[in-house]
Image 1 (cartoon, rainbow, N blue to C red):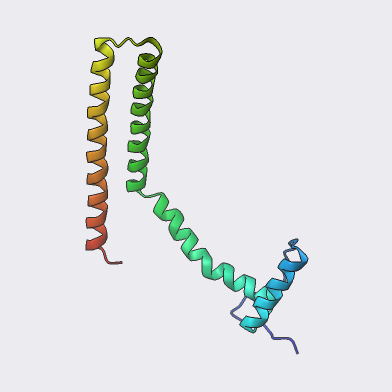
Image 2 (cartoon, rainbow, N blue to C red):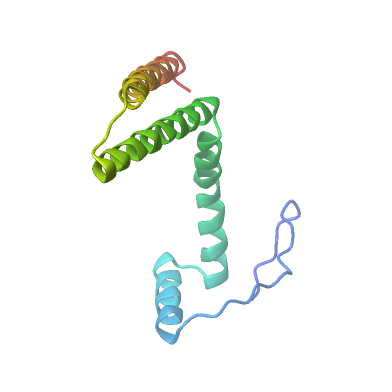
Length: 134
């Protein structure tokens, strides 16, 4: 006897075909039996249950805090590239100019500023989370 969909439920008439190995098929069928349901219902329920957390993770990745941290990370990467270029010249030519030294000091100061900014952003985010117990 088929179970009829409730009037409020949309009828499940669409099909999705996937390819799996024989072993995977057996595992999926065993899991469905263990849950006391059909393979289709089990997969649909798993997707519905896990879609919320996936969406939340994506939303968290797109926050202004994350965007700012990405910007800071990119800046630190550029500074590191400058320092590596200077180190390469030093190792290659064994010659460092006063400009190279000044640039290195400037870049290191910028790194310190960026690290302080990261610390501030993370601290601000933690404060916001503590004050908003959603």
